[in-house]
Image (cartoon, rainbow, N blue to C red):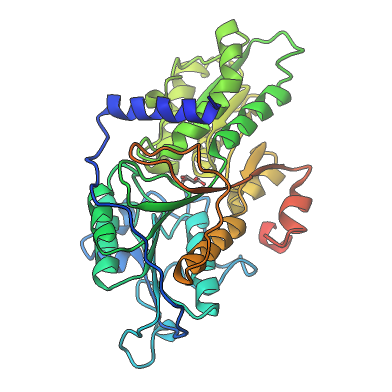
Length: 427
Ligand code: BGC
C-alpha cells in the first residue's frame, strides 16, 4: 500500500474524528459530451460582487500587508488581464449582445481571488478556454464555503456544461454536486480533492504527499540531521483542516521529520506537533503570525535558537516571517514554503525564507483545459493515476503533476528560465 493511500486513510479517519465529513451524494455515474461550438462569452465575477454582505476585510488573503500573493502592479508576465481588485464583471469579456450564447459553458469555481496561485489558475484556464472558443464563468468565493456552494448552484442553473472546482472545504460539496450529476454535468476537482461524492469525474492535482516530503527533506538536509549532533529546535505550521491537501503536505513532511523528533534530535519546544495543533484556518497569514508570536514569547524569549520552521505553504511561511521580523533576533531559521508566490520568492532572495515548492500551475491549468476539451469533444480524457485518490465514494480518475523545490540556488532555472517570472517581478 502506497504512502499516499495510507495518508488518505489517515486523513479520512482524522476527518471522521473531527466530525467534518459531509453526507454522501447519491446519483448514478453519467457523462456529458457535447460538440464544441465557437462562441465567446465570458463572465468573470469577483468574490465581493457575489456577496454584498461579505466583509472584504474578513478575507484572510485580502490584506495586502499580510498577503504573500498578488502583486497586481508588478506581475506583467503572469497577469492575464483580470484586475484582482475589480468587483464587477468585466464588460470587455462579455457577450456583446448581453445574452448568453449557446456554446459550451465551463464553470470554474475558485477559492479566493486574492491568493496569487488561485488568481493565476483561474485566469490561465479562462484565457486558454476562451482562446479555444469556449464560454467561461469564472467565480471566486472569498474563501467562504456557503458562497462557493451558491456560486456552483448558479453555474448549474445557468446550464454550464462542465464544472471545474477547487474546493474551499472538500467535505461540503456532496449535495450541490449531486445536483450537478443529476443534470449530467461532469465535474473536475482541481488541486483539492472533493470527498463523499460520486459526481467527481476527474481530479487534477500535484503529488501533494511528495510536496511535504520535499519540505521535510529540505529541513533534514539543511540542518544535516544525519551527520550532526543537534538537538535542533523546530516549529510546525500547516494549512486548513478542511483542505485535504494540508493533510498530505503534513504527512509527507512528518514522515521525514518524525524519526528525528522521536529520537530527540529535533525538539518542538511548543509541544505543538499533532495536525490539529499546527493547522492554520484558511491558511491565513495573520493567524500564522499570531501563533508564531505566542510560540516565540513562550519558548524562545530566553534567547534560545529556533533552527527550523516547517511551513506547508507560502501564506503560512509569510506569517511566520512577519512574526520573526518583529520578535526574534537569533540565528535565522530554515523555513519552508510552497507556491513560489512573488513576496516569498523575494524573501528567499533576501535570505528570509529557505525554499518554496514550485507547483507550475501553468501545467495543471493547461491539463485541466485539455480535460475539459476532451470531455466536451467526446474524446478520451487523459489521466495518469487511477489508484491513489479514493474520496470516500469512488476512486478518482486523476492526473498528477510533479512539483520541484526552489531556493536561492536554482530559482533562475526554475522560475526565470521557464518564463514564470521575470527578474523585474522579483526585484
Ligand atoms: C494548495 C496550495 C495553497 C493552499 C492555500 C492548497 O490546497 O495546494 O498550493 O498554498 O491551498 O491556498
